[in-house]
Length: 394
Image: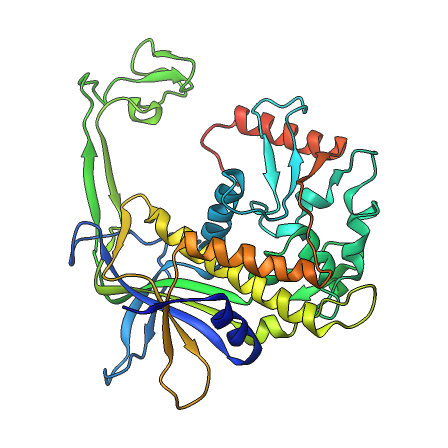
């Protein structure tokens, strides 16, 4: 059994080591050899590619089950749930749509849910309590001067941007906006894949409605056509009545095993600087690096402990526990560590206390913004179009 990662281990690692990595072999929840369904991409295709593997002379066909971006979203979702439940205390910026007159309530969208984190257009097009646009407000304007050499503003408002990466391409500086590389990257890939050729079947209608009957109207307002020669008729299957056959190319895959690979680059974290009162502070830098590493490992552990239900008919089960290896000195055998979400939460709290001792702090209360009238109108118009054109996506 691997040792539990201690705070001293973490501090030593962020000071000198290259990375933490975690590799887990996975099988379908139904058992080895049962079929699962990967995500489909534009054109209705799976993301397949040949990969070389140790000990195998020729490349084998592999398919992506969960991308780096999707894995990051799952970890951020786990962080949001932990923050909501009080397991951890981290800064969150939220846009509250509860007062907006919309057809469908949106609720709150936070910096842990927005696709581009703190630089997302949803937050950009929101206002502080005094009516100023977020990026023009006193607190939002601090982001305009953020960079890897001045990472304090991001640490203050959205530390996950320093873990999962950010490019402030739609902010005040456009393409010259702040860029922070992704320090945490994870993906799940199925190895040595056999793709099923066809998905065929029929959805049987318990009412026994016949395809020969012609209808007029729409799915929400239809009637039986008067005579079979009526113009602009539709079939019962078009409004989800009757037996509906299906014949598709995306019929799932089987594979030898899947592998989840997660790497936390400590080199990337060490590039971040946290000056205090405008002056370099190496002690604050080290404390910030340890805190971000603890937060990243909590995110990975919390997401893993939620289970790997990636999508419909794609539930995976690990062959073993989640263990991390520390890549410290080339040529040395990597040290192995175990870390649970509860233990990582404890490490995060201890590491952040060291940050505060050196004057590095983050916002302790959520920053609540309101959407601008223009953003509310945009959402409302989009909902109206969606309501008028059901089943049509863009």
